[in-house]
Length: 354
Image (cartoon, rainbow, N blue to C red; front, side):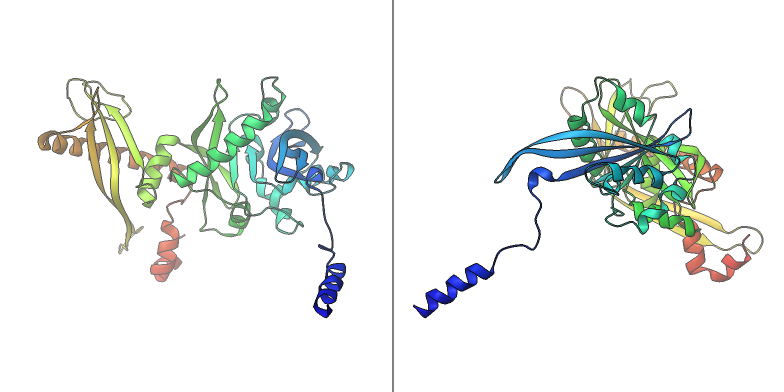
């Protein structure tokens, strides 16, 4: 009897959580889209929020809503959230930051730096560049918020899981402004006419400033090979012809199509100090590849074909690597991290460099 009385008293005391918020009142911010008004120069903050309608026990009907905030700066645009249901900082607690190229071109970190100190800000959220105007995209009658949010989230996650390009968090991007040896490459996506998303390359940033040069998606592919970060699930296709200008040259094989899959790879950057002038830097990439002949039935090629194609592929990749490195040099970008290696392994040499 005493035991039952004690349990009854405990049930009266244990009233549950100190605070609660019904599921139907939760507004989950999926994407914060940052753009610039072409006429006024104001910052446009479009964020897509998921609201759970008909919330019940373990179920509900998610619905996406779009809210537009404007202001002379990003922080002032966010402050406009005071006049909405959820109060301030609603638009910065999200899953993805999507920046237009226009916004990214005008001191983006100067606008975004306050996020490091803002309450509830999602600073570990990936930052992605959108090619074109995000605001105009959302104004289209055909724009579907639910499909766009779901597709965008899976697309960004797949870029990293497929090792196409690593994601960069908002915190990493902001802190790179104070790190002269921490150059950044942000992925760029665009929407095709059929509303599907496409990876189109990467923008290069040095201490928060965008370079004029942009890496194409083929150059990003080469960059990942130079970094040793894109060996799993990496496939290259091409058509061997007697002409020039194809995506991949694989030899004069009567216009037969081939595909290459990289099975394993190792990349190594070595620094060789020179007595006079700049040091010599060698980027050595070794790849083990599988070569396939494409047609009605994929078959492995004979060894003599493979050897010939291996030489041509080596020449092709070396040519593309040189072009990619030259683009990064024009952008004054050291995404390969050569400066960090010189700084850590050759401090005396680093001090002598201008």
